[in-house]
Image 1 (cartoon, rainbow, N blue to C red):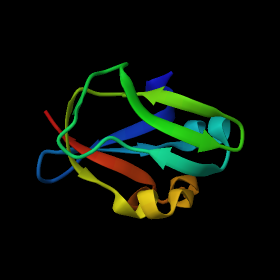
Image 2: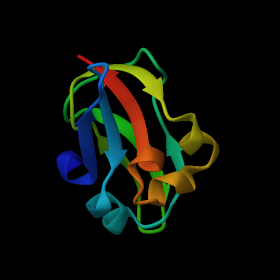
Image 3: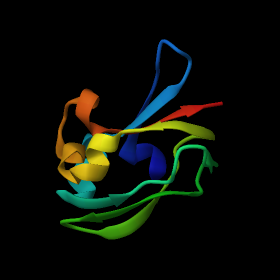
Length: 98
């Protein structure tokens, strides 16, 4: 399930940026709240990643990758509607380093 909800893209600095993709937006609906782990948290593939409250679901969503969170998109914490955007500059959630 997790892989189908997220895109993962390597950044120039070697981190990987994780964001919500079209499938995630379609299946969850409009996101109204997101609970993102703090920077420094280690993610494990298929373990809990984020908690989401959305139009069609209130659920925990599993991580698509392993790594340590090095940066959080503060914009989506303040305004979770950014996750509803198709713009990857807005709908990313965290940056992770191996």
